[in-house]
Length: 427
Image (tube, rainbow, N blue to C red; front, top):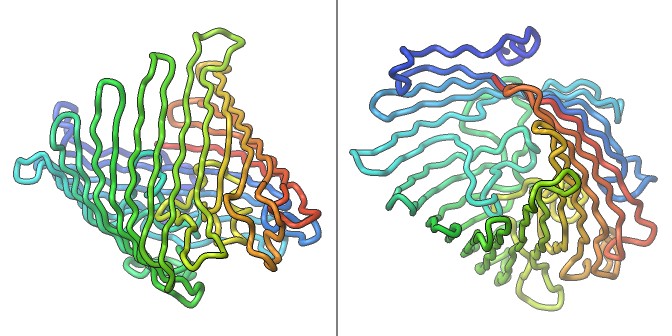
């Protein structure tokens, strides 16, 4: 209830600590509050007649406590609640949701005076741009993204680093206490992952490589078991001072249910930052995405598995349009050719506009009601975002997305509009 009381009375953060000359030993108490209004009409199902639109207010409050000691040991805990109020559908109304432990981890830096750090417990984790590791519980949306994990980071040199990790993600939070436990699903089935990630920096960019093993078990919600090995590489290269190139590709092999698995995916984009003039964008991005789909005519499974990265990395709205296929934010059988233009209106206001031509490497399964089409064009997606910063502790954005379906979907599929307004307080 402490998080809710702080939300109600607007109590700012408190920082307890030693004198400024010794900032390594202190206790820090921080608070954040994210307020969102989201509205959409036909995003799930692409059908006006289904009445699947929604409009709601969601408020995520988090209270975190961190202790840092003189002996390079830190302990962090964070409590989070995300309550919602639904205007549409009216039948849902107010939902308090759960008060849960979002983070709880122990971190030891410079273990035995070696350039090694060990992190144990519930923690956030991502590598690169989050293409394969980013979110451990996609079914709770952006409420949380934690992994129940053990991680070791080793600074091999000033320019290279290796990380080794292991995590286990159950369908529901079963390890730590929850207030008002609603037994919510965090993921469709138990998932386990372990792997190694290596990165090296160079004068002209960075190279990262990884090898990740994932196992998934069937559950009462979904009959899916899998054991797969994903190997990949990411490169960021500065071609000119104003021009850079980024690319990542990965290959998956193993077993999907009882079928052999052979899948691949990746992305590539270039960023150009022209000489600053009032009428020119600050940055222009051109790129492409390709995530393989399953060929129904073969015995093998070729559909890309997004591993632990089911989050809105390319669109905040289209993750819901994907839900009737294999689940929300299940990026698979997906391709895009896109462009992004970013403008600095002022030093504290930025506008970005994205255009995606979306495709499907494989046609939809015949006979399926959804997507229901016979082609390979998913459709056209336009994303506009205005971001602002009023103070160091107060930021926000407005996002508007519009999607027009193509022949990958059934005849008469309706377009959708999706809108979000957000204000974020961080103390």
